[in-house]
Length: 296
Image (cartoon, rainbow, N blue to C red):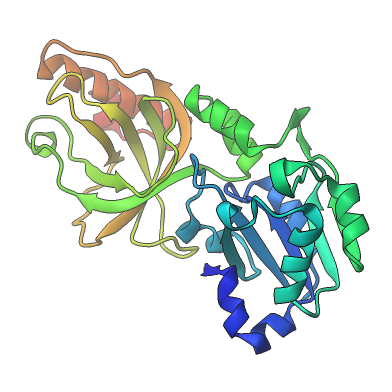
């Protein structure tokens, strides 16, 4: 994803764009996808960034969009009037014929302008996408964040149109998992909003985002390790397999929450609970439970 201002020095590329989608687009959720559908063949997406609690940080958004994505810091435009904002966009994209926005798009100083103002200031076509619902829930990034913070992965994933994910570099854990509990893969969060602390059933993908690389079923923990070193961790145990991890990064995909984050008096009690978590994860992910796990 490139800076929108870089197009000032790339006239040929800037001249090629005839439609643009405007918004924050920090989630790339199902409502955002409806907006992108209204772009023409020479369309682009402009993410207006405020850098506050992003569902999907900038480096990971291109994966969910077929159009080129550019970003623009809110600070650059927040003092502009509505008319000046439109003039600014058109000045960089001289062949712009269509602007696509969501029904609740606001712009201009203090966000005083609405979609009807956009139709007034822009001489081309303005396409306003109506509110998108998923089983009577209005799809918004704010609602998805609230659902995640409350551990409701089932509803959050419906609004996202995919499993919520966290990516980051693989880091060394505390060292007792494989020896005394269960082996885990640990990652450092690369700017993603965090779900509620607890244990989840989900998947782990080693390496970069990919449509090809497999996602392995896993039990995932997010939170402070209350029973051991008290440190914060994002770690996952692969179900029914041992893999020599050579990749430098990984993606954790959250499907359903299993339980809250609890304190255990000793490692034996913690290990017994993790064994139960693993059994539940098999059932949640609808994977046949190996006999040694089921009988364990």
